[in-house]
Length: 175
Image (cartoon, rainbow, N blue to C red; front, top):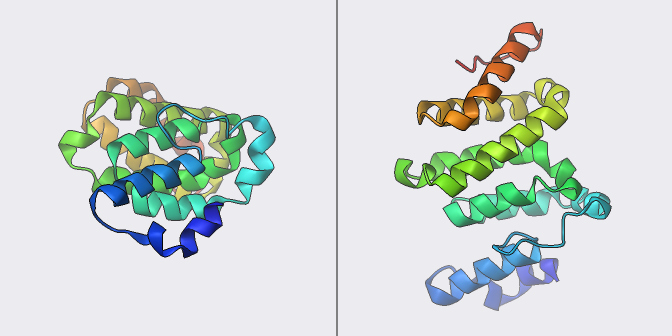
């Protein structure tokens, strides 16, 4: 169904109300929508691991919308989304950069971004440190939120800085 939407001309609209409805529908097919989804349970992990390119394309096209970004951050915290988390750091960083400062400070959005970063760090810190792109993206997200005076990011920032100080890997400072 998801792949089928890519080839239908009706799904290629780029403006207007129908375009917005199609964005919502494509997001929902991938489990990213306001009421959440059953997609993302632990049993979905092998299926979702094969969908990295699909979620990357979705993020590049749709994640710059604060509501969709918030929903995506919620989705990738689910157990079945485990294999999407490291690449999602870059997608979330890029989407966050594209938002205006006003929209990027939306409390619900910031809460989900922080929750996602905390989930990734505390469940996959060694993998983050070993993956240059994921490490760089997490550092940039933490720096950005820290610059906005987001209090909830302080503990993660301190933990990340301590790990970077101990890690022999090529690191970008999180200060």
